[in-house]
Structures are given as structure tokens and as C-alpha cells.
Length: 335
Image (cartoon, rainbow, N blue to C red; front, side):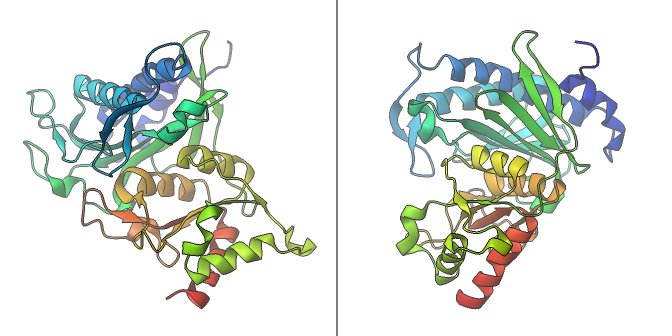
């Protein structure tokens, strides 16, 4: 294991990059890494224990709640509460904020937004799922956190990352100084640096979109999809359609290989479906730090004003040249 750098070691080495370097953010990131190991263990044995299937309830988003959704949500919340470095949590699975008011945490400097188990509809069929997290430095004064602490623009994030539970388990994160990926080594139980300074190719050959909803797309999206399917050797088209249906898995693949992921507005969801706080802001921060681009088709995601805790948005994210081309079609064909 000579030369291996663990997640904890890496975080400590990079601590001085943080504007307010006193160790809180470093410890917070390590708390998230610990929770990820626990959730990974359950994901890997999901078929062996009674943790598959739904709970028979729906969440605030109106989606069926999976048993593993509940487990992941509880584990991350418990780890963050125990760590004492955040004063509040917003989860996709909870309608309201979770305000931590114990003596250790109430004056903590950070709040965390979570999608505990992204792509959970894939759990029962053994397809990759993930966790997305976003960390903000609180803007309220000391004492209990407020909604204002979470309704910041994505550009104000202190850190963001995701964990993908796939053929191997990876944790990818940024604090605004590039993107680094760590693979979980089950033999020692540690995340080890495996993908330093990750950079997304400027262009790729993959487009990811739920093409089954084609009839509900705006004209700009329809025209871009037609463009992707046309033959043109100069631009390496047609592109390959690859759609997993898990934001983490689709974006992770494109981050490494190049490509674009699109979840557009539709007739049934004119404001888009993905959540700004829990999904789009953190993934956009990572994409930009890796040299990519993320917009709603017209505006940079990280510049959009956040007005609601569960606000939704369309998203076009991935290789810079591909996102720019999609934006051209949006501006030309969609209002």
C-alpha cells in the first residue's frame, strides 16, 4: 500500500486551501465519508436482507420511498449530527429543514444539503445508485440555522460531492480547487485517491436523456436530439445514447469519458424535475471545477436564485462544447 493516499490524509493535506481553515470543513467531509462506507455496506448486501422494495409511502417529491432511501437518509443524518460540524441538514427525503440544536452543533459554521440515495428506482434491479451532498457556509448569525442558510446561490457552495455505488464505490468531491476521486478499498476499509485532478473532455460521443419523453420536450431539446442522431464524421456523430436514469451514474460516466446529460423541462414538468439544492447545484459545481459546463439551457445553474427548499430546474450538464451546442438549439428554437 506504499504511496496510497487516503481520503482523510488528502483532506488534511488540502485543509489550508479553505478560506476559513480551522478544520471544521475537513471534519465534515470525513463524517460524510464515514456515512458513505456504512451505506455502501447495505447497498452491497441489499439482495440478502430485507431492505429492497418500497415502504408504501411517498416523500415530499411525490415519489415512492424505497427502504434503502430511508436507511441512507438516517445514516447520513446520524453521522452529520454526531460529527457536530453542521448546524442544519436539508434532505430530499424530508419536507422541512432538520435543525440541529445541541450544544455542540447549534453554532457550527456549515449546513449540508443531501440527496441520500439518487437513482433509487434502480435499487431493485441492481443498477448503480449514488449519494449527492452540498455544503454551504452559513450566512445567519450564531444559534439555530435558518432557511436563509440553504437558499444561497450554488456559486456560494463551500464543497460538493457525490458517492457512486457501482462496480466499485467512488467518492468524488470539490472544494473549489479542482475535482478528485477516491475509490473504496474494501480490504482496508478506506477511500483511496484513485482519480486525482479529474477533468472532463471538452467534447464527447455520449448524450444522456430519457428519450422516451421526446414528445413532451420543447422544440430546442427535440432539435438537439435530432442533431445528436445525425451522421456527420467531422463531429463524430451520431452520438451514442446512454441513459442509466441515475444522475450520479450518468454524470460520473460523462465526467470520465465526455458527454452531456440532459433532464429538460417537459409538458408535465415545465420547471424541470431535478432539485436545485440537492442535485443540480452540487453536480454543477463539480462539473465546472472539472472544466465542464452546467446550465438550464439558458442560464448558468450556479447563478440561479434559490427561492424554495425543493425548487426544481431543467439541467444540461457535461462537456463544455456539447452543452454550448445544446444551448444554441435552445436559444434558437425554445423561448
